[in-house]
Length: 322
Ligand code: ATP
Figure 1: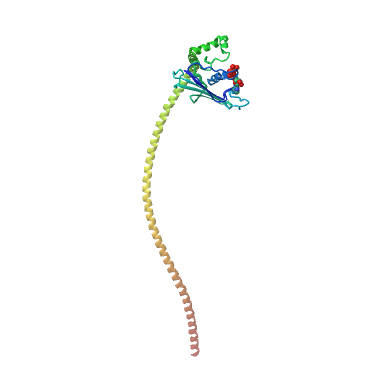
Figure 2 (figure 1 turned 90 degrees about the vertical axis):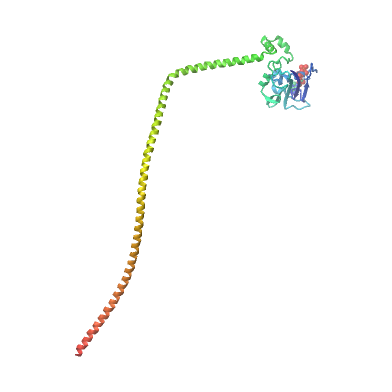
């Protein structure tokens, strides 16, 4: 595994996009004081996930973005990508070439990528464990760091040696395992507490369980009784239905007879009505005839009286003449 290239854009003094290509052998970067040599190392440290701004010689993280000069406007973001040859697969990833990049905007928004896919800082840290490349790695020795290593505390030196010995990964796994063990032990204590709490509840629960079993048995019996009652009711209802049907048939017969009788009576009634009408007509005719007879009788009686008067007069005349 070796560093193939570093791409920098908008990072510290590098406003333009710049690509450093590294080949076999040693590459030296030379230049006057303040020309930006250390900024290259800062760029590598930054892309590997450095969060401590002091390590990057700034006051805030936004200080790594090109701040502009008299001649140039400031940049909106800083971008660094390093490409490593991984044909020996020292990095635990299925690629022969690995590009890790980091981008930061002035708004504070930032992103990390491994071979073009967005990832978390944690993924980058894990990728470089025990390779000596990580931000804590010994492959980047900054200005004055040798001094600090030599005069620093033994624990700080220990970290460096651990990384070089390739045991950081195992120490980390051990710490994770120990943490899990502690969690499990805490869980165990909690489970024992719960268990003893539950044991206290066993007596009442047993009683409740007996009552529940009894309740279930009674419920089953009730179900059977309900079913039987239903069957009995159904049978009774069937019988009632048969009786009602029989009565219905009888009543239907009666109704038919009554209908026929009603038809016959209706015919008789119509006949009688007809006869009544005839009789009324005849009565009217008789009444007319009677009144005509009465008038005729009056006339004839008048004529009789006249004739009687004439007879009387004639008799008188005869008497007189005699
Ligand atoms: P020395 O040899 O003295 O350590 P050097 O060559 O390593 O110097 P650096 O310290 O890497 O130089 O670079 C410092 C230069 O980077 C300064 O000129 C500073 O103005 C410039 N610089 C740092 N941060 C920014 C930034 N955000 N925007 C523009 N320029 C910056």
